Length: 281
Ligand SMILES: [Fe+2]
Image 1: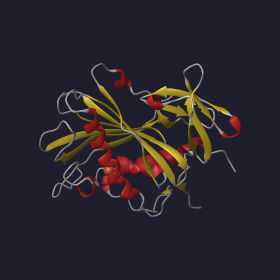
Image 2: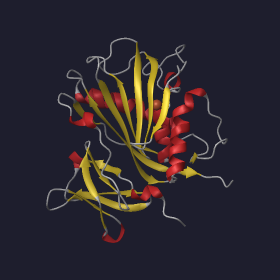
Image 3: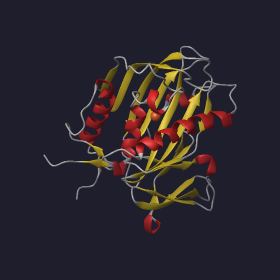
């Protein structure tokens, strides 16, 4: 069997602020791992048979890999921008493919039906045209000029507004959403989805945010995002097939699914197939 290209990628394995010397047991792509703090104070991640795994701390989380990452973790320049609140939302465990979790995050058509009266509401169900591309230099999937009517776009939003979004996929199980920032026109709020693949059909989702919002209490910011992701969980755990189909024709895309089509094409091109269902041609 060929080595899956996803082995050499970075994955979130815990919240950096919760590291302790004792270590926390979890898993990465089917391998039991332990995430703790080493004697030098840095994150220490141990795989099966005591194997030391790569580790780094970024964006509020500990990152690791079962393989040999060829690049540093992707950049989020906004994370270092002064004045942003950095929010560790916590973890939502979802019984679904890690790739399905990312694909769902990229899909706005479900907002009025799943996040009713928060991120969407009937009759505002139409997804307007937007742009999708695979940026070859960065090797990332981008969707831009995505616009959607939202009754309550963010904790800091008062009343309904048309929100503009950009989506970015810099790694097979990570996505970054840039969203109109109500209190700071011209800037984008950053909401990420970092997915830890525990198994091909099980993942821990670690949302993280970098927001311009000085007013909302931290617990409200966390609660708002957790509410959204728990709503998504019930959809994700009932998707059939459970793994993400990567061959064209298995699911019929609609116009709103352009980002999903590009994401699947990009995954297939790289052989990022952990959590995917491939059908022999
Ligand atoms: Fe959702």
